[in-house]
Image (cartoon, rainbow, N blue to C red; front, side):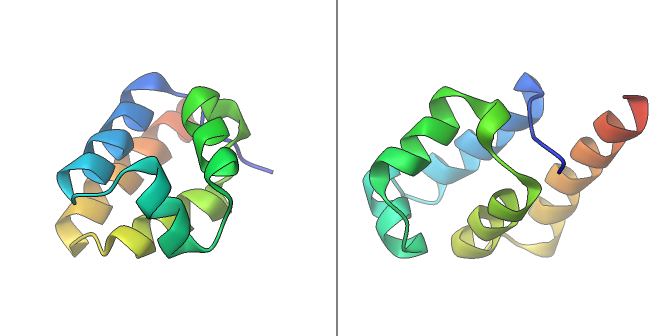
Amino acid sequence: MLLINHTQQFQQLIGKVYEKGYTISSLSEKMGIARTTLSRYFDNPKELTMGNFGRIVRTLKLTTAEQKVLITSMTDWIAEQ
């Protein structure tokens, strides 16, 4: 299981959450998960799986360009590991 634990890429994702007008509560409700679960991901990025990362990206309805930036940076980081 791949985990997201690289601070810069995670900060980019959090920035997109707020840029799109969501809070942890509103995003978790939209995703259909508990607020405490999403909050735990933000508090401890090592718990955020790539699958849930994808769910967040889809829920935020990021443009193709925004997705590419996040995914490319994550892919580069994974390749370095």
